[in-house]
Amino acid sequence: MPPADAPLESILFHADQIAARVRELAEMITEDVRRDELGELAVVVVADGAIVFAADLIRAIPAPLRLHTVKMNSYGARLTSSGEVRLIGPAPEVRGRDVLIVEDILDTGLTLGTLRTLLVDAGATSVRTAVLLDKPSGRRRPYSAEYVGFTCPDAFVVGYGLDFDGLYRNLPHIGELRRDLR
Ligand code: IMP
Image (cartoon, rainbow, N blue to C red; front, side, top):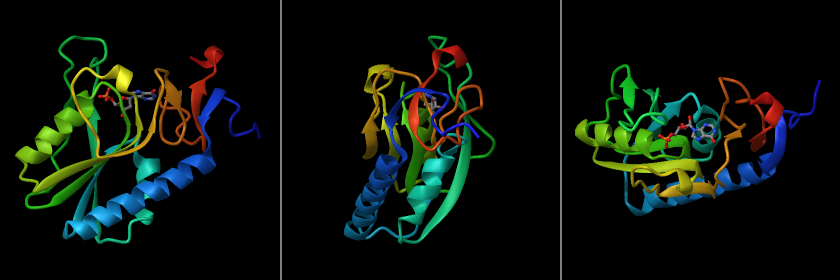
């Protein structure tokens, strides 16, 4: 079996570092839920990329929560000026709920901007966002997440849920993909 980092040019965030930061984010979220006396959280996970992050994050949050997954179709969003992103399937039932969106990476801001608007329109009481990575250099629409794991350099990264053409989501570390694999 090849080593877990074999497809990576370089590792930007090691598995241990990610695990420690995810626990810190969970503590921050738990503290905010307690302080703001929120009821049951509706956790909205942007599939497929955020599944790995969400699986670790929610298990470190002891507050009551319900899990929802959404899929967003961002086909062409990076290539066209329209930047159109759409929800695939029905919107989650979040009326009167305090929502926590969980996303792998905040890049252009188009996906999260669209999703947040949609959840507010669906009647969410509050919407907060947790992203593992923030790539501020990619922003095309202003968006700031309340909980950010790491600031990511302007590079295409894979691992820990992040893919290239559907692959590499299972790598435990996050890093740049080897040039010969792109
Ligand atoms: P945004 O709408 O550009 O903010 O898009 C966020 C989505 O783009 C993420 O959910 C990822 O699927 C994808 N994405 C952006 N940057 C990367 C990257 O470096 N690696 C893998 N996927 C990325």
